[in-house]
Length: 598
Image (cartoon, rainbow, N blue to C red; front, side):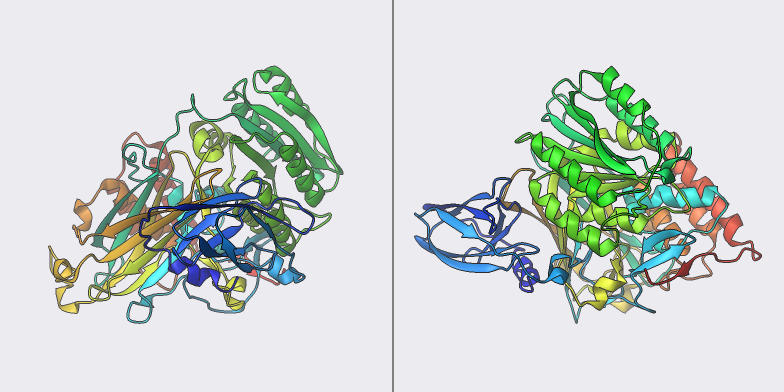
């Protein structure tokens, strides 16, 4: 596995070839069970492929004899020489090292760590992954970086919950990339049959006149709901005693009732519950039987302990039993994350879900509750389970996630998505990725493997880099802040890596980033508003890269100037900034959150 990152770096550019042969085969474990998502690297072509649901693979090549490298978390990598005309039977042996199996992966390949290395931070009895902000990187030292793309949005609605309760936000609850994902800024439909559309913009940095902001928008194609494949959905619902509050199980019941309205007759729903014991509450049922499904949801009650591990295993077993080949197979886990029976640490859950996801079943996580909410555990499950993560703080948010953004949440257009960025040192002297922060514990392990994420239908991701131009004498120029960029070439190059659902081939999109500087007050209003959201997150995090003397009103003014008048979410954001100003300017309020070892 140590070589995988090096192999990824070699995949920025792929030259087309004319295939003369076709390598076919399958990958299985020692118990003869098929292994899905095994990474298959072909050194001759600098190409990466993956095994399918049944462990099978097919790879075109021009050579009669070739070499392949097979690797998968929890198994020993294997390099073999093959004759392409022969069917390949590959057996991967399980690694005996538990630490290797549960090894965490990076969100972005960047450095940045300060303070004590603690795996989890606590606010009262809530837990959050302890994050380290990304640092500025000198392009003279490292011209490239990589970061995974996801559609997780949980952080924003959780922040809203704290502020609406007139409470300061725990620093590690603030994930700026998820805050940006919440709004789908500057979304543009991809052309034709393209999976993604990319756009970029360079402008001023409102909190540092000597710096610039580089925006990258990634827009995913929208699926036509009338033509999406049938869904095999398993609702995995926490009905333990901790869920017996109005903002927990009753809220989730409302949320799932909203989802049921979108089901079709070709869709199948099952319900697994856990609370004291684990059981199948509703056997697989056609989406046309909405009344039966709704009745089963309405009859849910909360009591007992939280055997999360056993429930997850049962849900995956049920999803596999009703698996639809070529369909949308997904578990929707709804919980406050307070597992107290079985495997319950972040590392245990990561190890468990890494194995279960090999079944080809996706995982959507819905978090609820407060006081004992375990964000760190739900986040691990979503990121390792080929899925996404949302926090439901009220019924309006439930409607947003499960109705308005139904296809985004439940239908994947690409998986294992990550972006490689290479910056031009002649134009940019330093760069810093805002958000996409890694856990401090991962950085401490010196683990620099990257794990891509899932992108849903019609999703929009806005990425922001803070950059320092190389030509200091151009900083005050009104039109060309990155001097001589046209002569030096593009300011950066982005490569999107992704795999289509139920496919084994890694695809690449190359996007040269032009020097298209425009003054901040002249750029797209959505990008201006995105900047206000990023500034809000930086201030809440008390980022060392964000001047403390930047006032809340400065953030509000940018948001107000770029507000779309009929956009409720943007109007609500401005109200949150005002509330935060009152909370954080109250000198009598003390900081409640503390950091402890999990």
